[in-house]
Image (cartoon, rainbow, N blue to C red; front, side, top):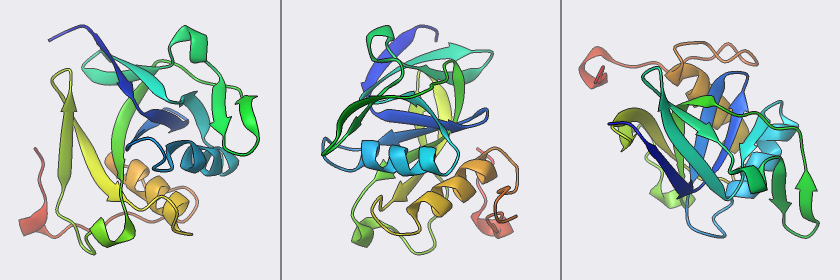
Length: 161
């Protein structure tokens, strides 16, 4: 399937590793994006994300009218450098802390017939940025450059999907 889809979400990238943040309004997408940007990520899109298929990958960009804009609650709309046409390697579903499994099985979501690794994440935990960065680099088959961490997966729990 080809085409495009625009969804309510926020997207950032560590280099070419794109992370899609999903959750209802007020769930912390923009707040977490700001903390990720402060930790070295680049804004791709806030509030609405345009998805398309490029060379077999799910690709994210901002709608032109929103490119480079991030809502910072209590401050207003700020302008930031932004990236576009970023491959999404991880989706973070923003949930309450009690909805996050301690040792989760591999989760997956699909957009435009592309399957993407998905995790549940409590966005306001102090370690949310580090957890998300580790999971994103792991989904890209790389160790986290800040910590060297990789997610350990037991053979019987691994889903190569």
